[in-house]
Length: 234
Ligand code: C5P
Image 1 (cartoon, rainbow, N blue to C red):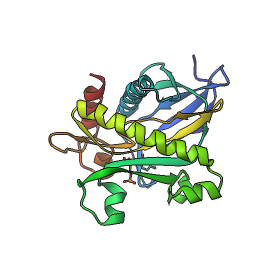
Image 2: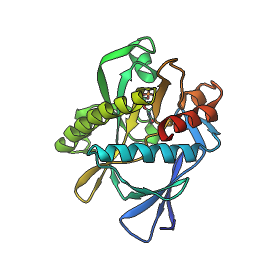
Image 3: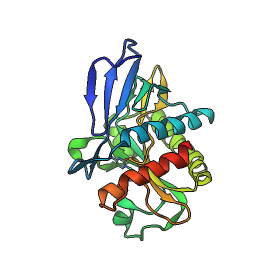
């Protein structure tokens, strides 16, 4: 399957059509951005890490009955995926206090949550992805009641599965973002699951192994992404 027309240029991925109208190719780039595109840079070989890590996680989730958009990995930087009608709601799951939660609630980073927290954000770059709730989603028609219920159910289930998956690999899944879309009457998990959209701390040392290294100039960005790759993909 070959890339045809580029139909979307994202901050870290491009989307191309294929000869099959139901399938697209996600091309993973090395471009990195943070703070809603204000900070920009490149992490060498990040695209390769994110493609392989996402593919390994999608495969694991499929095995646990979570349907994803992935068809297969085509090569180091390309993933063949089912075409989705993207739900414009980002679902964030949190197990440990960090990032915007620490700021919003005035809590110390690293505090373990007794129960996971699920949050919704409106997927809109121009607005900087503001936090929303079920009432906004319903009122502005971003998803139906049934879909909202499914986002919560799937989000919490995926969090439970991935917490154990990462723990077995000596990684603490602090928080992460999920995106879903509609495909032929089903809701599929879309986008990617990689160190770009997750906070991943080393289980023993709590060392950050994710995009926070780029966001806050912590150094060893490429090295830590590659460490995650080895811990996940072997
Ligand atoms: O910044 P915040 O603490 O709200 O982010 C929570 C989690 O969601 C982090 O793992 C972050 O990388 C991810 N996220 C994302 N894309 C966004 C917003 C958050 O990947 N637009």
